[in-house]
Length: 439
Ligand SMILES: [Ca+2]
Ligand SMILES: [Ca+2]
Ligand SMILES: [Ca+2]
Image (cartoon, rainbow, N blue to C red; front, side, top):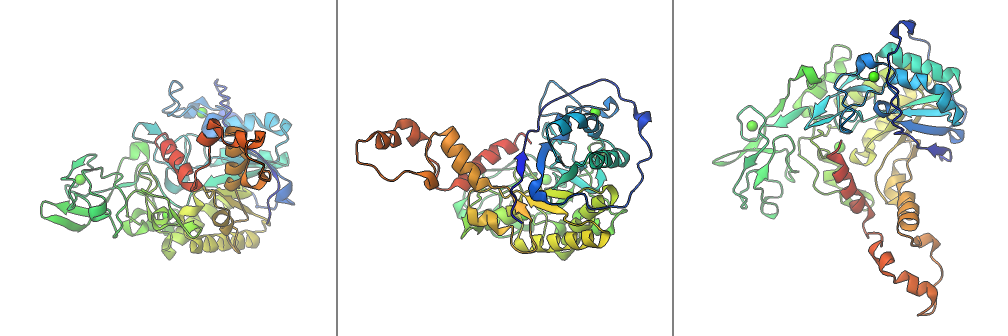
């Protein structure tokens, strides 16, 4: 499906209203039959909002809120969104895309999970935003206004769920000093990448296989993976009492265990090995998406929220960090379940953060995504024209005689400094890495 709807990504308004709410008004928003609420997604105006940063409707869930620090929760929740639906509707919005709903590792390395991208349990909701009754109420009140609801999901990684016990002492060490010579303390790249410092939470990618343990005698096999047990911040292995399929996400074999991505290079318009198998920067553990048990766990966990709330689509994170086989399975399974349940045109679109047309387009192959964000256009139009004041390759004028006004402009220092990098994806990745430390 070609997506030509208007993306009105106007979120992050920071409309923190404060004040007490009246939870007594909540009815019993019991499960309703799910249904089809959209005719043609190409006509939709989609509005993205980060729930924590939009509106605080219930101060009763303002745990850990610190409005003096933007790296902390700010108090926004689903009731706050409900209270602002008149405003959202006046904007002309026809679809609301909300940030992830599932429970996260609540806080890590001094930052909170206000964004929702650090999942720790795909079968539970993030209590900062409300409960199931409130989420159902949000979806139902949106549908009553003709507004569809899309939920943001992640299948590539979970939050900082475990550490690699590289020194076999049973505890997470944030600083392990090594010799820095070719023997290395850990061995990502061996002689090409000697290590003098490593953290067990987020060691660099190991080209040879799982992250290795190390003793004074040298490499000591795969480093034990030890899940953390900190229930006060939801930093515990995913539970499987609601869906038995989730058990694989509480075991080491549910993850690739290769360590943190250090390079995002593509090969022939497809992601390189590290992009697919490495932990996302920040210690976000890469899920073993090739494993059929993991694939089923993801389908069952996210389909359950469709059944429970009648949402209309998924926006899917980090597409290029997961192999195509997973997307073909996930896309097919979700569509089949939706069709059987009477929900037609369930929409799945995703983020492949790259400037390569062929790579980004590849995720709309049969059975994969319905649509993807057009990041190549972002580089061509936003960066080249609006930020750098240069022409895009597709809009360049024919060559002109040397010394003309046009050629002088092209050689201006400003244009030179702003010349788009040859490898756009690598440049953008650098920005991603910087941002990740804030997430
Ligand atoms: Ca709140
Ligand atoms: Ca250790
Ligand atoms: Ca991956």
